[in-house]
Amino acid sequence: MAPELFHCRSTAEICWSAADELKNSVFFSAIGGTGIRIQRPQVNPLSFLLLLQRNGSTIWDPDGKTYIDFLAAYSAVNQGHCHPKIIKALQEQVETLALNSLAFYNDKFPVFAVRLTNMFGYEMVLPMNTGAEGVETALKIARKWGHETKKIPKDEAIIVICCGCFHGRMLAVISMSCDNHATRGFGPLLPGNLKVDFGDASSLEKIFKEKGDKIVGFLFEPIQGEAGVVIPPEGYLKAVRELCTKHNVLMIADEVQSGLARSGKMLACDWEDIRSDMVILGKALCGGVIPVSAVLTDKGMMLHIKPGQHKRFA
Image (cartoon, rainbow, N blue to C red; front, side, top):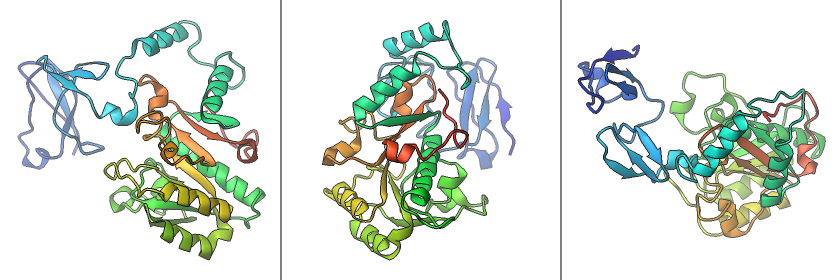
């Protein structure tokens, strides 16, 4: 059903559709003195709370009531809403150079790259815009590495993923999803993936033993986000690291939501002192102001991507 517009008496009043079929499946994308536009949600809304202002961990509704934002935009504002240092840096930069095409160098990307690689102990970084782009970039790198270094025959490379992990809504990653709602109507889905249960190292070991010669990577969230903040059993990440090393499989950590101090350490994988072959960052990397993601890895993986085979945003 197309969005409908309903009129309100004040900005603080919530308007409901008279249509019964909409009452439990709508959210409000905009509110003003003249009305609210009602649309179907892309995700299940936590409530019909309308927010007008945010600062740090505090948010305000139209009536001036305050709340503490523990959600933090699913980790996109781990630093807090409208952090003054981030806002100041953004304002200063857009007044100097807002957009730089790939035809030219700029003086900010090298600083960003050195800072990020040094912080996490990797040799190279490839920045993108969204977390889903970061995941797709990591998958391309892994497949290229698999064909050129592991010598997997053409079109036979396999990625292993965990049921319940969320890696975005792009076609490649929903093809790996166990969520029928995410995949229904989007076929044909892409081949070349196998699924295991999250937190079960024995199931991963079994699939590695059966098909390890064609598996290029194991993609996982160290803490599952959308599945309900699921923490794996103690020792799971270490077991995964050992299995990936034994079977020459790239360990690919999607830390888009769990990374950058969301779990109490810079990376959630740090809780078990393991180093993944690739780390995907996003959300909090943007400071809550512009979309930024990144893939961190070493030269042995990254340099398989040749000029013209992928694009970075910076």
